[in-house]
Length: 280
Image 1 (cartoon, helix red, strand yellow):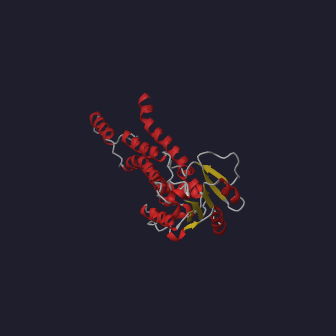
Image 2 (cartoon, helix red, strand yellow; image 1 turned 90 degrees about the vertical axis):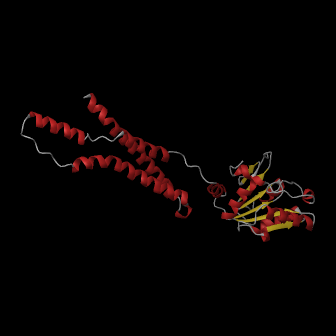
Image 3 (spheres, helix red, strand yellow; image 1 turned 90 degrees about the horizontal axis):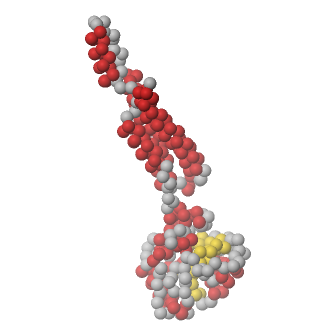
């Protein structure tokens, strides 16, 4: 009786793993198909294919030993004495072991189950689309967000693109119509900004054109740009402009080291654009 209980434990282990895998497959499939088909990317499709392979692998691990035993031809009973019967019984036990999956099969199934139970980390592109709520047009100021400098006077001396923001910026251009804008004091500052952005590779992705980098001479001019473009999102560091645009723009991101005491419900605050998208 102890031997029978021991030999059935691997099968019971596989059954428990199948139940876990089935529950996970049902949850994953419902989660994937609850979103629109256009939002499915290669990572999601790969997850579906992988889950299907895991189910097939698990089913074959159980089904194969049973089919092998079922296809085994019946042995004729020997009538020639006790010695022949004992030899035939011993041979049958050796060639046809009980219907129990080997520890190797159990380990293989467990590895597959454990792999698919690991949480899948979203890509930066997925985070950008989720954070922007599928917004299609974004306006963003340069000083303090894309550039290290924080005033137009500094732009007359040098222009430095923040390297940490480039990856986020390029992901935004893949899904959104992005416009960059800034107040400058002279034409030389404007030329320096365009040159710095080009050297940083901002224009090489094809999502951002030089014509979409706008310059003005006053803060009111930047506000006017945003109102005319009517973006889904505007990113700025000036709290006054953020407050003025709150009634007209669907969402805003106020980049500031200190969180303001009062903000409109549609205004989010973050220390940097990278931190807002989880890259800091």
